[in-house]
Every structure is written in structure tokens, then in C-alpha cells.
Image 1 (tube, helix red, strand yellow):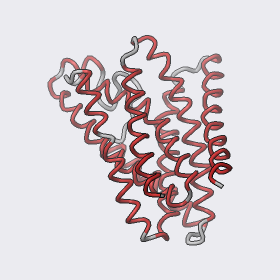
Image 2: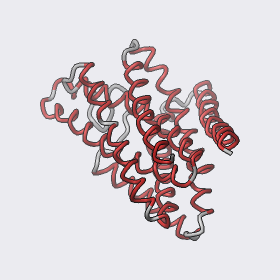
Image 3: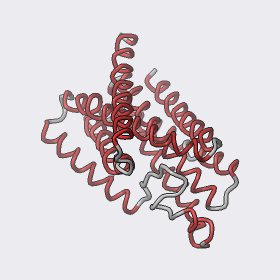
Image 4: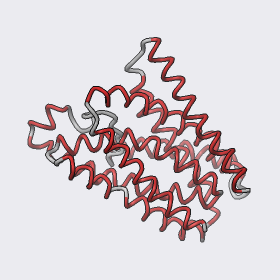
Length: 265
């Protein structure tokens, strides 16, 4: 049953994020640009809530790990994702062009940047493979924790997928090809989830550390990638809206956690 949950949510999560991203990319540019900040704010709340209210408490409660080991793994994980972002294309784009892959003008006029599309596909595949491992680790610990983790991953994948598809389009792919290739990069999520189910299932003692690694990735992405995007709009009205949407993301995780716990038990 746990394997079925993992397969279901790795497939649905990838399809949902890619599908929503494709639908939003088809919207008029002005409307999309107005919606993206809201999605980013919501993702911040969902990821931080999943990390601090779901993953880390489960890791701390595991009998096979001590608090210093968990906090040490959290610090090591944040450093790991910093290095990944530097060298393995972990950078998350939340606009039609971003600093990681060049400006819109650079992508459409400079020949060397046509490789950006291929690099995005490789980087996104690696990223999604790791997401699959994290989802599996959460489900192996507790079913409702797995669902909460998958929801948080989908929440931050939607704005990222929009940026990735946009980079592919500006790199020379047609919109249709960009969406299809972007959908295919979500298949490694399933591979990572299934492989982790068998590998982690046989090594339960590593589960708290994988959960902590998942929490580190959520914290790092929220703080290093998403929140700086929000600071680009410092005006009071935008700040109030951002806080409200972050709160909505947190509330979604809390409510889903409570509802799932009641339903599953």
C-alpha cells in the first residue's frame, strides 16, 4: 500500500505541477506576471510549514537519531543545496527569464545560450529524482506526512516549472515541445520514489536523516530562492498580500495534516 501511495503521488505531483505550469504559460503575459508572485508566496508558506511542522518533528521523534544529529544534518543539508545551486543547476526560475539562465534578450539572440534549454532539462530531471526520494522517505515514515510533503513539493514546483518552460521556449523549443519535454522531466520523480522505497525500506535507520534532508531542501528553497523574489515588491499592499498568502500556504499544510490524520486513523 505504501508503494502504491508513492507511485500515485510522484506521478500525480509531476503531472499536476507541469499541467498547471503549462496552463499558466498559455495565459496572457500580464495576467501570468500578476499571478506568479501569489504562487511564490503561497509556496513559501507551504514549504516552511511542511519542513517545520511535519518533517522535522518526525525526524526528531525517530528513536534512531539524536537531536544534535538531526540539527547537524539540517545544517549539512542546507550547505549541500547551496553547493547544488552553484554547480548542478538547482536554481529556480519564477519568471519568463531569470538570472540563472540569462535575460530574455540573451536567450533569444546569443547562440551560446541555446544550450540553456538542455541544461534546464538535465537540472530539472536531477531535481525531480531527488524529490521522488524525499516523497518516498516521507511516505515510509507516515502516510499523511507523505501527502503533506508531496503537496509542498507541488506548491513550489508550479512557479518553477513556469520559469523552466519559458526558458525552453526562449531557447528555441516550440511551446508544445517545451511542455512535453518538461512533463517528461517529471518521470525521474517516479524513479526516485520507487528506488527509494526499496532502498530506504531496507534501511529504516537512515529515514530520519532523509526526512531532515527534505526539510533542509524546503527551508533552503524558501529562504534562498523564493523569499528574495518577494522582496522585489516592498510596497505595503504587496507585503500584506504576501503575508496572507504565506499564511494560506501554512494553513493548507496544517489542515491537510489534520484531515489526513483523522481520515487515515
